[in-house]
Image (cartoon, rainbow over all chains, first blue to last red; front, side):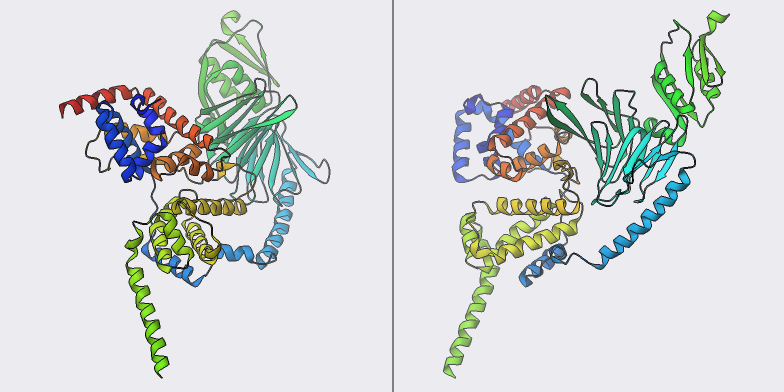
Length: 353
Length: 230
C-alpha cells in the first residue's frame, strides 16, 4: 500500500510518519511537504494524524524541585551512591533482622493465643504439625486475626487452611467457601489465596472470595486496592495460566465447568455485606435466595412440589431473624412459609385457601 | 621560578577553558547523539553536563510513571549517572542517548521492584501507577482538526488500553521511539510484537471512537469542508 491510500489509522501506525512529526529533520520534512503538495486531498487526514500524535502525552507530569536537580548532580560529581545501592551492599545480619525475628516469635505466640480463644466456637483441626485448619459450621461465622495483622472473616460452612510457616517467607492460605480478607500491606510478602485452580494474589487490600465447592463458581470481588487472580487450566496435560487484575468494585467469576472467566462491575457492598451480618438481595432469583438463607441460618428449605417462584427479589436485612426475611419474601410474592425446627416449608398461599 | 609560573598559567588557562566550555553547552545542540556520546566517553565534562541537563527531567518524569516513590527514582537516576561516569571508557557506542538512558533506568526500576516487591508477579505489578495518557488540547497547532471534545473522548479511550499498551503508545507517540527501541524497552523478543501492539492499540482507538458514535468519517468530512472553505 502506498501513502496515497493511507487512512488515519495507517498514518498513525507508520513509523516514518510518526517520527517525522516528533523529530522532524530536513530529509523527512522535505519528503512530507513535497508529498503533500502532490496529494492535497490527504492534507486533512495528515493534519489529524499529526494532531493526535502531538497532543498525546503523559497525564501526570512529575517535575522535581530545582534543588533535586542540583542535589543529584552534586552526588554524581562526588560519586556518592544512593542509599538503595548502599543497602544492597550491606551485610545480611543487621539489627533489623534480629528485631524482625524477635517480633515474629512474639507474633506467633500472639496468634496462637488468638487461635486458641477462637477454637471454642470453631472446630480447629491440626492436621499435622504443618497445617492449621479452621472450619466454620453452617449458620456460623468466624473472625480471624492473622499474625501479620490481616483480618479474615469466614462465612458459614467455610474452611481456611494455612501452615505454621505463615508469614515466614510468604502469606499463603487455602480457602473453601466464602471469606472476606482485609490484608495488611506488606510488599515483601504477597498474600496468596488458593481456591481450587484459582489463585488470588494481593499485596494489601480488602476483598471477598466466594468459592463453595458445591458450586462450580469462584467469585473474587475487590473492595480496595488491586488483586491479581490466576486460573490454572490443565488441557491435554499442559498447564496454562490466565491472569486477571481486578480493581475496586470489580468481580471476576470463574466458571469451572465451562472454564470461563467473566469480569464485571459490582456493587461491592452487596458482596461483602455478609461480614456485617447484613443480607442483601439485588434482583436475586428465588433459588439463589434459598441457597443463601440455608447457609446463613442453617436451615433446609422444603419447597412444595410443582411450585415455581418467578421474578426477582431485592431487599436488605440488617441482623434480621429468619422470620423477618421470610416475612419480607412472602410479602412480595404469593408464598407462605412455616418454620419447623430446621426445615422451612414453602407453599403457595392460594393453594391453601 | 620561571618553570613554576608557566605551569601555573597553563592550569589557569585550562580552568577558564573548562568554564567557558561548560557555559556553552549549546554547541552540542546540533551534534548527533553518537558524537556527544563519544565526547562523554573521552571524559569531556561538558558533554556529561549536556546529557544530564537535557535528560534529567525527562528521566525523572519517565521513572515516576512506574513507581510511587519519587525518592527512589531520584536515587536510581543518581546511581545510573554515577555508573555511567565510572564505566565511561568501556561504554559502547550509542545511537540514541535518550533511549539508552531510558533502557537503563527501566532495568533499574525492574530490579528495584523485584527486590522490594516480589518475583512472583508478572508485569502487572510493574506499574504502581496507571501510566495514564492524555490528549491535551493545548498544542501549538494552528489548524485544529480535532475538537476538544473528541480529544477528551480519545483520552478516555486511550486510558482504557492496558497499561502495557499505554506504555507503548507513550513511547511511540510521545517519546518518539522506534518499533525496534520499543521492543527492547518492553523486552519483546521480536520487533514485530511492538508493531502489532501499536497497531492493535490504534485499531482499538478507532473501534472505541465508533462506539462513541463520533465517526472519524464525520470529523474528516467536517475537516474537509473547513479546508475547502479556507
